Every structure is written in structure tokens, then in C-alpha cells.
Image (tube, helix red, strand yellow):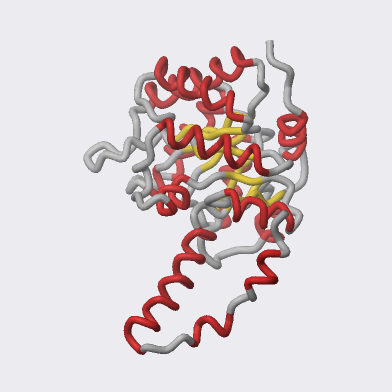
Length: 270
């Protein structure tokens, strides 16, 4: 059996009480900068990484994702959670195999979502979705790594915004072995509070991708973990495209006057 990495133990402790922000870098450089700012843990973003290599979200292959997790985990000292999407598989046994491989990359946690990415049937059938989480739990236990498992229900961002069904799924994922529960797209304080109450004492993650709340407000609702998904990557690309369009359309370089100097950025890296 593998020895549990101290970062895994640290990650597990973070979920025991209080509320913490787990921001999402899209590459090694952004991970290092976020670590310098004092965040206690980081999480990868499938969208941000995909965009950084010229793909759409969900357009990354398993081998590429595993290499990305390993790169981020090796670059920083804090725990790293992997956005493992739908496990890069449909059938539970295949999910288990892939989760086992992810546990070898140095990550401290990973998530499994129930989205199919198919328009006609956007989320896996209930029983299959639960079996996939159970398979991920089995793979983690067999790895001996202690990696924290987050179960995600994607209905609110997959065209099925049904709070009762989302709660039913997350309760089942908790029973199947998920350590943390997550329903991206939920924004209403009453919905968040209902979700937190339903799965207690298991911790809940809320993703903030727009200016609709604060850390203090989410903590008051009982949220344990706050992520930002691909929002940092979107912010960076928005600034980049704004500067590039200014040059292309106006022939001016005004955006460059609002940036840090190269020397300032250099000093942030080893």
C-alpha cells in the first residue's frame, strides 16, 4: 500500500472545517503565482488547460490530462485537485482504471462528474452515475493514496437545472464514497443552503464564475470549498484579446501601459 502524501493529508484537513478558496490555474506558471499569493490548495481547470493548447473544453485526451496533472502537482508544494471531468470513460470499470492512473500523478484530490456531453442525454442515468462514483472510490482505496474524491452533479450547467434531482444525486454520490460534493451552476443562496444541509456533514464546493457572491457569504451558508473554474483563464484571454484587437483595429498599444513590467513578472518566478 502506498504511503499517503503529506499534501493529501493537508487537503483532507482543509475539508474538515471552515471555508477555503481553491483557485484554478491553467498551467505551471499560473499555478506558481497562485501559490505565491498564499492559497492553501489549487485545482486544475479542464477548460483553461484545453484553451492553453488550442482545444475546446473536453477536447483533451486522457494522456494529456494526466501529464498536465503531474506537471502542476510537481511544480507546487500545496495540494492539487484534478478536474477529472467524466473520468475519460463511460463504464464504471474504465472509470476506475483511469482514476487509478490519476492517483499516480501526485494529485491530492480529483472530481468525477455525471455529464455525458451529449445534447440529447446530457447527464448519465442515475444508477450508472452512482456506479461510476463508486468505481472511482474503489480505485482510490485500492491505490492507497488517500486522494479526496469529489462527486459532481452537472444538471445546472447541462440544461437540467432541477434542485431536487441534483440533491438526490449528490446524496447518492456521498453514499457511494464521495468525500466532497459539487453542483456547478448553482447560485441561489437558498439552493446552496439546501444543498449544504442535505449532504451534511460532507463538505460542499461552490464554483464562482461571476460576481454574484463573496467568500464571506458562501462561508455563512456553510460552503466549505470555493473554486473559480476556468475564470482566471477567461480573464487572462479576455485581456490578451483586448490588447490584440486594439492593435489590429486601431493600430495603438494602449493596453500595454496597464500591465506589469517584464522585470516585475520575472521576480515572481524562481
